[in-house]
Amino acid sequence: MDLAPSRSFRVTTFGAWLAILFLTLPFVVVFPVSLTPNRYLSLPGPDWSLRHYRTLVEDPTWLRSIGDSLVVATGSTLLAIVLGTMTALACWRISSRLSEAVRMLMLAPMIVPTIVHALGFYQVWAQFGLLDSYLGLVLAHGMKGTPFVVISVSAALANVELKLEQAARSLGATSIQALWRVIVPAARPGILAGSVFAFALSWDELVVTLFITSRNVYTLPRKIWDGIQDNINPAIAAVASILIVLTVAAMVARLLFIRRTNLSTRG
Image (cartoon, rainbow, N blue to C red; front, side):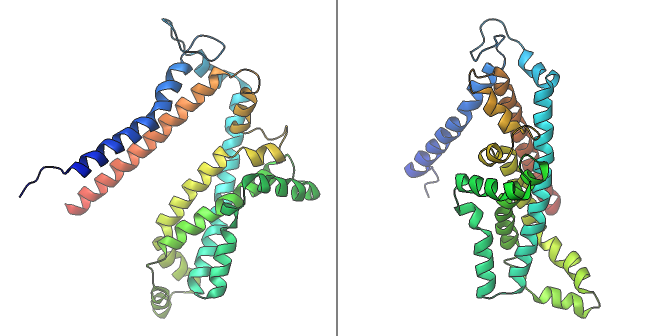
């Protein structure tokens, strides 16, 4: 038997490596730019500088934008987890056409264009006095992140039978205990996955933020947007480099955790 890799396999592998190279090119460009000693966007010469990384720590506007993004992303993620998990659990319990209609309604924010969201939030939030407020931005981002939680939790509950909850209740557990100790652990992977997507969406959201905020709430995407209006601030490249490193570190940590779990399971 010929165990040599086939031609189609080699072509697929080559295409995969090209895709990986293409995806890593921004980091190859962004990271050197973040080390330039100049005040404008340029590749560094013989001299390298960390001045733009220091700017992120010393400039209060950058610190404020990072803090506001963390507050808004955390609040909207918690809101999305509550709404999305409750919706997925309700649709899982009530398997009917009504539950499918509710699920499709909750997925509408993924279909509607972002600019339509922004205009709608602006008009409604103006009537309720929620413009340029943390609560208004958390509610807006939470609504946009809820569909991701609904999808992930519904996928996690797809192979969970309703009889598990009934069995727990027959053994003396209350409805809340059966839900918290049996169903929620089964849905935990979906909840975690949905929370990651909801947090990333809120952290990166710009269009809605530009429409419903002005001065009181100043997130990181808005700060970056302001930094590229006239002259691109090299500190933006420093922010991008830090975010890329954190993302890669999180992915590597996750892969190592999975590998360690698999090895301990086999052992």
